[in-house]
Length: 283
Image (cartoon, rainbow, N blue to C red):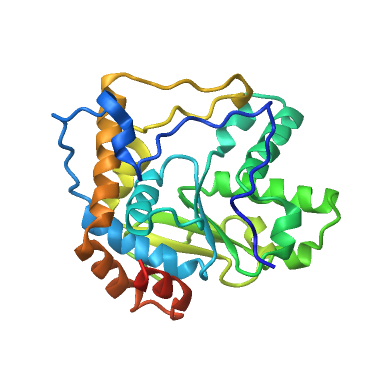
């Protein structure tokens, strides 16, 4: 049984951060500044990194956690339009420090439910579900894992089944490697509870890693202590640039040469990513 990712919970207590539908930019009206021409200096590196992320997902749904990987999400939605396996997940471990634990857990579960991630669905999906994020220490992934682990037990779903359905793909800064190099997942005890290959890394050029993680202006507001109050639309000049950059990335993804490069890079990955290649071939 496959997950129906289009089925979102309708909970009036939870309003997810607003983000424009960039697949149809004609609906943006005058808010998109026509004089703004963002520099996509990182586009080729992003395409290469996207191919390796797709390959590690096993052909299932990809959830881009938080805001750091929004650019990869925008690029891939340009290539694949309304592909239901590409989703954004507004989740951040930082909010744990801002609200009581029980309240944070309730809101986090509402967010996951709105995005189609529940113990019931995870236990019954055929393909794995992958969570993608830029990683330094892995704190956000650990919070997400712990949340899911406790939730599955409370719902009395089979954890031994669910643990084989979830993957964590960390995007890290490319650097020199040696036998003595210790990666973030080797310091995280929780990763030992998952099967081999469920936690993996994709390296990225350090300059792009720094840009996406620290310097890039984000299109949506940060996920504050409570999303129940709603998040309005930001309209300052920095957001206008972020919007222009996001729209440009979607357009870049629509270019035939971008699709060709993505297919070429993806076809070299192991194990052979048959499902995503089939999807891209028909794009």
